[in-house]
Image 1 (cartoon, rainbow, N blue to C red):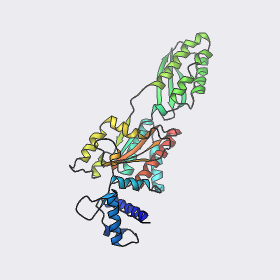
Image 2 (cartoon, rainbow, N blue to C red):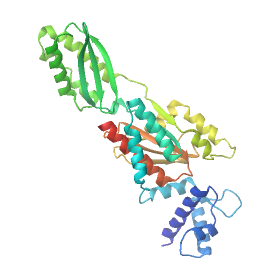
Image 3 (tube, helix red, strand yellow):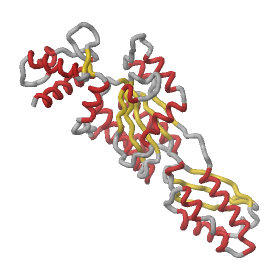
Length: 340
């Protein structure tokens, strides 16, 4: 029973510190929470929590603040994240539904996350490694040329012009269009490329060279090794969050870290191999990057095949239940758009 009560005291300290940004004392806990015990018992529980490394005294005052370990216990024991209101859910859906293309979707999502959470939002473009083929279109474009359009389930669209002698052979183009979609549809890009390797053998000898050229162009689109892209929004929120370390340099150190593309990619890619699509929270020193020790990162995957990751970065003193709910809700609505 004592352990459960102490965890309840820890929860109260976290909630009050997030709300006030001031160290929390036993008197404040008794006034704000119905803990059902005496002030002396609360002081004993706080001493036990401090001995366990879950809270600490930043100054000589009687107030205590949560440590990274305390936040971790609090997050791990959350029975539920705070639900969004119906108004918030409608606003998210309406705002994202107004997107016109993938770039607009990513930019809107990053801005929306930053606004909802008052944190810095990090948004990864859909990864080609996890994308699947939705449709491949072949359209005569000009004399001796075909317009090749590859549409992926992540919303990405790639276009190429292919020069082939039979570009005006409507029957060949229709047959090839049907076959490449039949063998590649809904497959990962590597699987789709492998499935198309023998298509040339299905056509007449005089057509095979052109078919092989078109198939090779499609395979090249699938195989392109692009630099992964990440969008950052709401960095001004970090300055307003009151990040500080002993030298008062936390904000500048965090912003310097976020300017490094490699750091952003490693931060946002921590969920790449997690198929559960649950929200992940990395607190303080769990972020293994210089300059980010005073921050927490809340991320989740989006898309039915976890094609990419989104999340927010803010101070360890953040409203975890609300932030986790907001990140999860935005990812869910985004997944509907990407998977549509």
